[in-house]
Image (cartoon, rainbow, N blue to C red; front, side, top):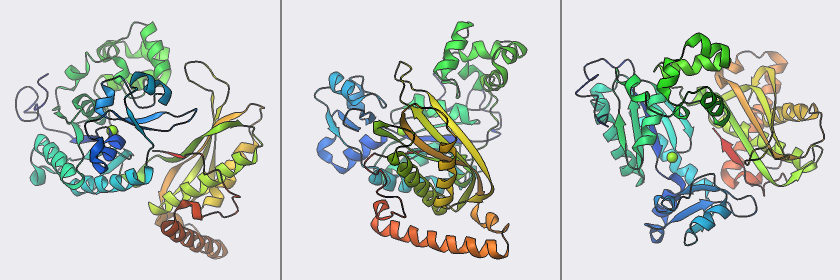
Length: 419
Ligand SMILES: [Mg+2]
């Protein structure tokens, strides 16, 4: 495609980079960690995922992908496609540990790292030219260093805007590096299918297809007024992206928009089921622990419920309720209190398939503390001491050691961290 080194030569090569944004994404992360730890699994069709009635594939080695196995596919389907595959359960703690080492490598290149998940992050490399050379050279150095420090392979896309960097890393897989210089973005995006754009999910794709928009170029050439009339603010946003305008900066870790914990129940639950309540308590504590570890507090709590009534195509109705507090918090009891209040406001009779809590509207912990006075401050610091103690116990004995009134919180169900 001739875009692998547009940074150094050729069209667009002479233009200055307004920003140098890398998107780094580990190849088949969980499966690769398993193959790293267990050499006998290397070169094999390996499938990491949950077993049981609702098990889904969380990661598949490239050998398994050759059979059509993909992440998020039901495990049963993967069995059919690849009966000779080796199925192993995931080991999240191990992946999190490897993730921390990868993060450290990223942070040795730039302090401005925005993780999207355990194995994926944006890096703002603007201004690092003197340290790492051209964007292409920086990309190679990043790949080399990740491999050197972890034994794992990362694919990297580099562009002046986030959206293009993300598309490039995906296109470069496996073991790839693609760099797209400024001045080439429109040309690069033009022929791509429109669902390559961030924010175009299944529903939007159907609506765009219905009006004859198939490629990003179609969207870029559509009349902005017509798009806005038809699709509202989403239309305006997508038109901007399609034209290669993506002003979103790389947001370092602590500014991340939200933290979330959620899990799907083995059996659908009624709204008043004690297990639902104890799950939310566990989620609240887990979130608070993560907030404190990252030294941030959140003001807004969102309760997320998936109803058990199937919509077809593996989809279920999603229900969210949010509440913003006067001050930011990193206290599990407080987060849980808000979530349970939101739960009490849900007025329907349907059973619940999945429950989660998200917190957002983040502040640095140090700034949140400044707003408190007198008795409030004393109460807050008492809470803070209790929470520090809880964090120490958790670090020593693991999450299951903490039970603070949560009556055997449903820990049997696997918790998925989101974001
Ligand atoms: Mg990945």
